Image (cartoon, rainbow, N blue to C red; front, side, top):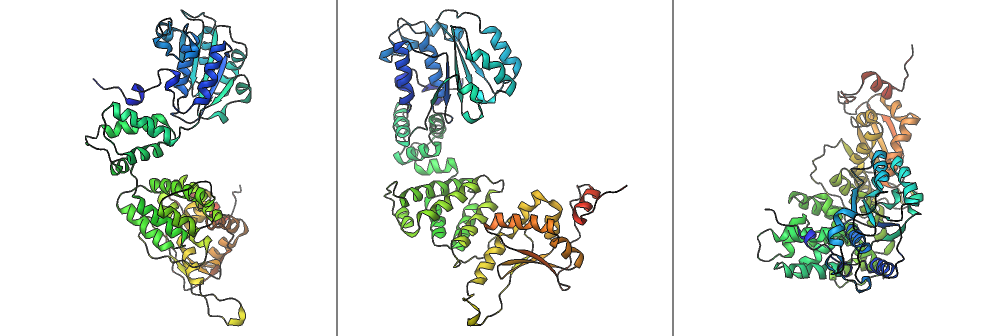
Length: 500
């Protein structure tokens, strides 16, 4: 027989066991003690912070005849019948699978039935934001004027998807993410009860990884406890989560602070070869740079020597920019390529003195080259000694331009891959072998599309021009996607139109 999961075993049995939601529990207990309860409640907040558990406790308490002010467990109270009527007078509905108009209409037909044993018929609708527009409209009137014996408790993780008309007819309670301190305290108590040996540092990592979710934290502890190890260490948790060692993450962060793109990319490549997932590297970098930002702004104090070193080496505005770009990187469908490009962009944007060395890549890249600028007289202006490094960094981001361009104009992206892109004098030059292709690239509409993608990737506008070079390499034979419609592909490339 399968054992009971720890998050179910340690679900709050009464209001006194609810973790981290004192502001919600206190208000609800006062309402129960004074008899000033509402006909509709809305519980919002992240997943795994106790919304459904508190909803069930409230549903049982509404039908409890014991002393509510004493925070006694209603399902154990000598004067309470909640243990009997909980299965009859408490109806839980999953809106994710019952989100249609017919489901709500069926609810409206049954809501008139009186409770079996208790004073109220309580309807708990979980993930209520999943209801369709028609279902919300069908629910609205019932929610506004329900029978006196009916109480609704709506729970959702995405309150912004609820109509204002629904929200305005409820008493809303926002459940906060549980603090790391509370999570560590309760995880330690559970580990002691379950006789699980675990290092305090491992508990801190579990609490951090769960991001304020009690259910996720207990599930991680449950999974670790079945690993068969006598002592759960920090390395055990790190291996389960797929996290990199902190030293490598700090090395990448230090490279960003010092504008050393080569060091950042080499360290990242080493992590990829060890099997560390790029998404986990991004998450760890985000967590570290959030801490750096807070410390650099004076909002938090950190005892770690590495963090202190990074805080001294960087100012708050740039720390905020790095954090923002890492967050954008976390949403990419190409995490490794996006992270590599982001690291280079951050070093390029931060200053000219960078070094980008060769690195291996699993993505085929077109030919790109960074041209060495012609020597200039001192009278022409400032020194251009840093231009080769800037041009090399620009070339490193060109593959990302082609990837993003493909989603907007697949044929144009495929055609660009056939020729060499040259980077010099802060502009991008496409070396075309034929005047026909040169004119196609320079066409106003096509050039606007290319330069818009370039500006997005490089975080600044860079002109893109095409020139004819008879000595340029011959174009590849694959001009368009073979799966694409031949006529539409030809029209997209040639810029023509269909006529009768």
